[in-house]
Image (cartoon, helix red, strand yellow):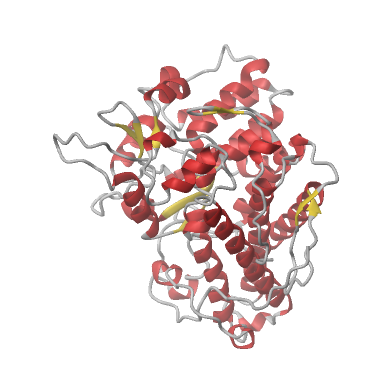
Length: 497
């Protein structure tokens, strides 16, 4: 597969540091900036990195498609019969029924493909420039250079792992020596041959390992309790709010995720345990009274256990309003409502005896008069609520709960009791008290997968979990775990790479 990156569309602008974290994070993409000018100053490197994060929050990537949009519809997370056609609903309806080549879906998936590779190109350009840059260019010297380099390398691995999970079979599907997508780590990339799944995973792991090494010292003294808060100190602005950046713990969590996908549970556990040893940094609230108080005061996403999130101050709440609340009916109206959600039958199957207690359905969803449940995870919280500002702008990318799932799955055949303890921690942090006393090794994974389905709603990981495990996906219909059903065809034109 021979493709040429003709130019690099740099996604950030050189900006003067403002007086708050929001000012820095709100730098928007601009037109092309010549490379020789952009990388003459430390501000240019900062702008380029910030632009990458901004592009990742676009609708085509993690703003919708790879978060609560088509990837969740594909994973049978919702009953798409409840959704409208407008505001992104139609492509989601098509992918739910596996109509991959439908012309009402392909423009969406083609855009996702091209935009993702554009971001990878920008990561590669930034990484190459930072690798050779003089540390005196940066305000924080060598530490900042390492941070920018580590994040650029880590982000290219993060994106290409998701592309691999979408466009190639999982290792459990025995892809063998067949080739599917390239792994691109240079800029410009004139020739991009498709590679095997195993090769791509090796390169992803290699890059994440390098990023982990680069970011270890950077994040040793980071303030994790305020990782999503704005900071007023201009000098520390770029290094603040590490929760909105691919930090050391996020890279470590991603390594655990990749190792588990690759069928290497021991290595997955090794990485997960690094974070578990620091679990107090990302602990979910388990005190019921305090947790519910915070949820009612705007912390609807329960963001205490989020390790890494993207910053989207306005887009997410606006997109949620369009797809979930455009048809809100007036009191007494008989007009039908349309929204992303699940039927009462699916809710009963998924939540069972926890239907009235699990915060993930009692608070992150609401039952409508029809009896169906509408998702509220991205519903805008009033500014008067204490936790609303942070809650509204967060797009979850990795939670501590998933780290516990990874650890539990990796060791349950060796140490079932310890695996149960990990799962109980997640459940307790979501209002579910369950000692799992009757759960055996045989049915442990059924219990874990069920809980993960509840946890991952709207966060883009459900489909990937079922694909990795080769499990039948259950929503409105059942979808068998086959390569035909779980691999998206490449776009007709692959001119993006």
